[in-house]
Length: 263
Image (cartoon, rainbow, N blue to C red; front, side, top):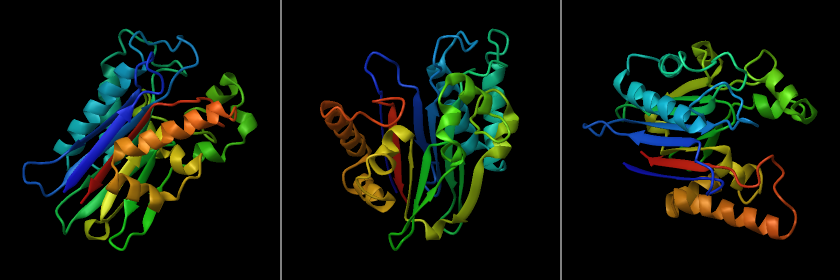
């Protein structure tokens, strides 16, 4: 088994709000991966004295520990418990009811013995990729944000009205009940050659710049590594900036993280 991961801040003067981790049991028969993309508030008025990097570190740490140690829990229950644990850590000092209280997208994957299952969970717009032994790649996506009309997200006020609301999109914040909204599933581990997860700062290589499909993305991860995929994205961003084209999203350079596990 081989695991490779990398993360890079969008701006050197701003802390990285992503979290990425992977763990293997001593037996070497299974493993877990966790990937979070912290949601940057438009202003410093999110009602929290800690900030998004603190939140993603706390939530990511709880998810890493619980997904590995509580294999009796389904991944939705793991996410709910981790959100509750993180909320308890700052509910006495922060306004957790604030619409912009620190929050994050979530990708979880957990696999067992070779004859067992690979479970997965995706919440919001990070991406999970499952590669079959023959090379086909399936992308597991929570596309609710992408299905919203762009005009509905034009201002912070309108986007806030759709955040963690019916008819809108969902992120991990302070309410454990949001775990029930995640996209989940499982496949036999024997049908998975590799698994990868990308924050939207890294998935830009495919879904923004169109440099290749998800299969080509997995091949870059396998042959060149997670760091190389992020470097490719940064080069495309710089080229677009120099040509005056810019990036068609709200951030020219976003935090970017990728993890690849070859089973």
